[in-house]
Amino acid sequence: MGARQVGKSTLLQQLLGERADVLWLNGDEPDVSGMFENISSARLHAIIGTKRIVVIDEAQRIPNIGMKIKLITDQIEEVQVIATGSSSFELANKINEPLTGRKHEYKMYPLSFAEMAEHTSFLEEHRMIPHRLVYGYYPEVVTNPGNEKLLLKELSDSYLYKDILSMENILKADKLTRLLQALAHQIGEQVSYNEIGQLVGLDPKTVERYIDILEKSYVVFRLGTFSRNLRNELKKSRKVYFWDLGIRNAVIGNFAQIENRTDVGALWENFVISERMKKLSYESRLCSSYFWRTQQQQEIDLLEEEDGQLQTFEFKWNTKKKDVKVPDTFLKTYPSATFTVITPDNIEEILL
Image (cartoon, rainbow, N blue to C red; front, side):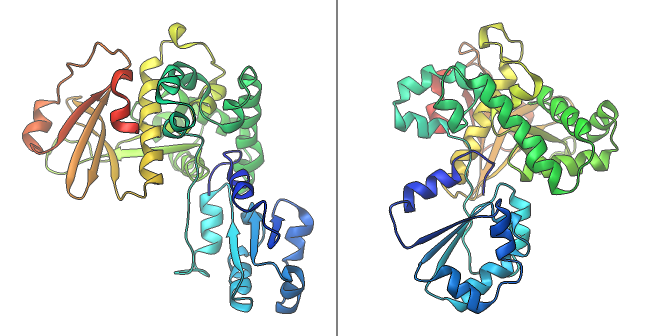
């Protein structure tokens, strides 16, 4: 599962493209979707024949896909099915119940800092950080230097109008666009559904539902607050970040270079947190991520809890700001927690 254009199909082609025993199907194609409508065991055997792997791209487009996959695996036991989808809740909802205990899920994101550092070198990718803060990590964007703006415009339009609007019959395309723009201007800040609703003309529940759809479509993700011991810790706040900064900048139409921007601090925070989330996901680590803040405005950008241990991080674009200290209130309440300031000078400590 992962957003469109992150490379799901390309990865499968790399893994399986040379094999003759693979049947490739695309749920976006009407005849493929129609073929599955009244599928029977006999027809399945005829379609699959001697193939041993069935790949179904954009599987969420096929009605009752979970039951159809179950039928394949029940009737033709030696066949393995690989399904891809660009909407986690559409695909997951349609396969979870029929395939409980019989499936593995993998998430795929835009390219990561760690992947690019391995592909070229750490030094080369480190030099590219200002570029990544503006144009992001979509594979097509990374591999077509000079065409970033046009490609990101097409990608952001595809998100809004091809996938998300059709998922729950969202009719207010302009409101969704304004919501995304509002979120893009608030990365690194606490998000109030009430305030955003007033800004874009939606009620708070609709704002929350739209953000939930955006999150499950791999456009944004939310961080909640960590609250354990202190009475004045914020308990219900949340921040929203973009999985890809190129998409974020396309949404607000701002591709100005880093030296000419006023939002570089927010971009840096979003960059490191999203890259860290990719790393944790790919490593299958059972780690919970939060931010921390009190009513007195004391704050820590990222807090991770893993195996009972707390790690905290503060993100500063200015490499001279390394003397930031953990808030005394936090230190007294959670004395065993570690604290690290992350700047471009020590980015490898959290991303590699």
